[in-house]
Length: 232
Image (cartoon, rainbow, N blue to C red):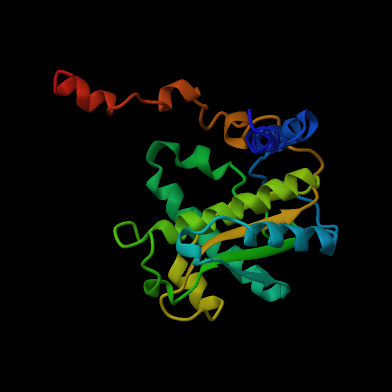
């Protein structure tokens, strides 16, 4: 082996993180939870800063960086956010049919309880970004979702809870926040200290839903139901 090849091989081996670092990454992914129960004591501003830096490090299609974050510090505005969510919660309950009463017992947000509220939104000039979006324009949403996930992982690593609230009328929320036309709010993020993290997703702990194993979601070559219908 030449010196250059040996050097490249050694460099390749060193690209992996240490065992401890890898275990930390796997652990924070596994222990991330969509939180609904918060305390109101303040979160260190440096932690919020690191969460937003992590969001800005997220991958984005065509490097469009389609994330905008509105920090809601006005208490009256926070009350109005809560009212919008509560209205949609009632509409959602009606759509649940026989599970309506069961749904209404669930805690679905912590807007009035948490220390910090951030609204994650898509900007109004997204149509000019074509790279990677000509046939899949929703990749702007996928990119913002990656940013939110990065925030979640940093929050969990710092021992801070975060919950994603999507139960609202986006047009009404955009109007409330005085957002420009064609922009779109995607998530109300509740951030704050928690007494404990859920051992399992809250909806599992509340017997609302059950997790399914990974094996059920991995296919080989073809979509199985369609392949069976076609005799493959």
